[in-house]
Length: 472
Image (cartoon, rainbow, N blue to C red; front, side, top):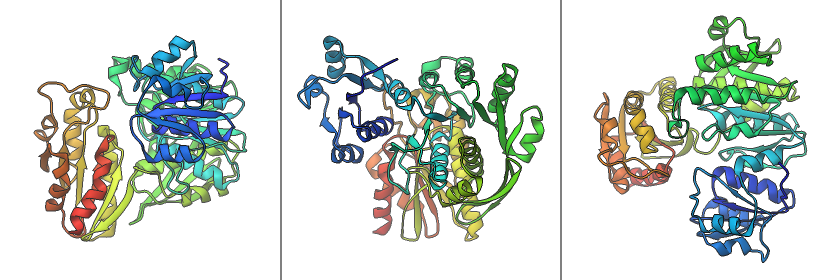
């Protein structure tokens, strides 16, 4: 595909993925226009960088600069076919491409370091970026969250590497040809698109087949499905490296070991891990708690090393990494209660984050409790995993469960978050009134507790309101 990227219009430009590619286009000198349903911090940031952005969708938005764009970019999952800007683009004969197609164009000529998997893509990609920046590689990157250190989700770098997430939700990862492809884990999700678990697994095999001849597939050995992908890929002649704990590595002796987590010590601020990479032992201090983050860190270091980074400097950069927005993000303390915010929206992610929170409070030794305010995301996912969500949320000492955030889906009659709360074994409040949720959390929390707002919808807005309620 060859696309004229001189004038690019992005529908839904304020989204985490769209705003990132828009930023890179601006840095490369393109004329960027776009639209979104509401004003937002990413939209305002793009405007300040030179983008022309309209609030609301209208056919006239294609002429924000007086000229029609050379290409229109959409996220097919989020933008309906009757969107007036999309309709006009078709009428004018303007090429319409997906965000993944645009990202593929932007990565052409660079060494592609891509991170895929059901969970952990944003955190692991961000860790790799932070490590590579400290190592002086200055990669271009596009990630699904804002780095806390730099406050941005994308960058046009001077180095030869391009680091990005490879999203499997609509099979768009098959647009890329990675030199280094990391798969953190595989667990059936997005079945509204794939239909079956088998089809979901197959997309990762197809992704592995797109790795360049001299490239590497990097798989997590602690995840049985990622490890199985590695074993199948070896049989097809793909170069594979594994990463994981010593116990996991012993279960998969046929996969060459690239990074081994030798030991992990949980601290009150995160973890200290000893890893062996390329025959060298390294000590890394991770500022974000959880064993899953230790594994993500090992993947990031291995991938960054394969991209040419010096191990000592990479480890230094990873130790300085202080997180991504909405990934165990500290939002403040009020009334002696700490409030964090996290994007977890799948049972496995919820489990990992709550286990990390539990490890954190236990390391502090103050007897604090973990309280979660959770908002299920999508009716299809909630119905599919209701029992799993109930088990995961029961790891908290207390939970406030909001109603389902439908996003692109219409409500399903008779389905509410009660299908989760009715199966829970911990103290739980079903709170259908979003505006009353901060008060509900306040009534549960006591000084010393750790509160997590969690989910992929607008539950993130509650963190500040909970702090205000606690402060009263």
